[in-house]
Length: 524
Image (cartoon, rainbow, N blue to C red; front, top):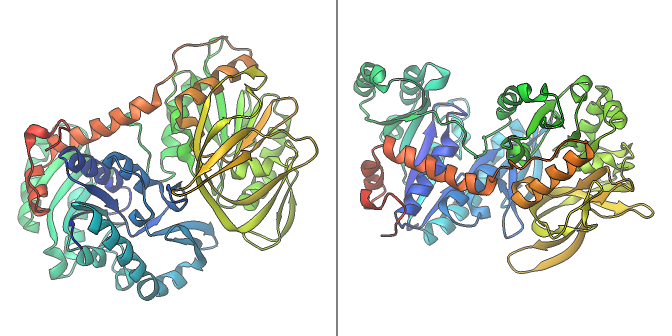
């Protein structure tokens, strides 16, 4: 292992470890160092495809983007995707390794999976100057510590200097910092070089007495206080982002008139996956987004979207039992299905190999397709164009498509079904031309396997413009430049963290020089 290592640990889940890791990756890269993120084990239904055609956690793909490099399977060698009944699909080095209960995984991970983790870490360390590691949950989860492969055992393997992060927005930050350190073994405490208070709102001066006291109790310095940042065009760690999105857009939903926002209802499946597909839509000023768990919440929607699902058949049956299926069938506007949502829109889902369930389940029959679940997962980055040159009956010319596929279903066409897109699936050493998705004969219903489709500005703007015409709304010209805002968000995040933390000490712990004069991103 040649790279130096900095590790971001947290007092609990959702304290902001993922974005702080991304910020540090950006800062190291701006200083001219070769940097890569690493998280040995992630648990999430938000995932991404790598150029090798392998699957990793979405957070590590975001951190790679912050570092200005392509995502690699070595950045997240183990991904756990919860699949119900206290089981998870276990992804190892980007491919399905098995489905295990929490107890089974807990007992097997050190002996069977730690060598795979070491392999990935050593590959990254050999190619970079510094690795920024992210922990999971808290390193003080003493009931899980014996079989831990993501926190202190990983810190020891990487010989990492550790930064402990507490979230003051939740309350109790000083107690959580103290309790976490107290529950560590003495040699583990030595790895904690300092602590960070994250997501602060208000006057930092009011924190000073508490910071001095906790520094004395811990014998560790406060590396800084990072303010709460609103409006970042960067993904949340998990589905905790959904309620906030609903609250922000609810007022827009009630606006009337021909220039009102386009109303988009997204069915919030219990096993909704890759909800980050809709972050760019949420940023559009001319859109009102509602995540729906009740049939009546679809009323007055112009567009209904069935998103991706980790448990497609279970979520289809949930939708059916909740009365949402009938609401979708009665909807006179546009209906869109993405990945598992597209599979639900077809005539039938079959699962002869028991990948998710068993037997045949009828779909909504809004698209002339059938899907058969397969054990082999397709994971590819893809680009392409619309197959029919129109959206919802409106001409759309030369609009590029870009996204990624992550699915276990194989979809076939019935009769004269028309595809949604023509794609070029890409991997690091090959490409394959395929047709994707389906569009109904009346052009009102469409489905695709492409995640991340709305991240592309040109397609998203064309989609919204065509949907407004279909809904008989007036055109708008205030579309959002999501791609530019995303890069600006990375820079704003990095600048805020750089100005908030003792970067000279953090760089020194990594054995690297820090040049404040180059904080604007200039190379060394």
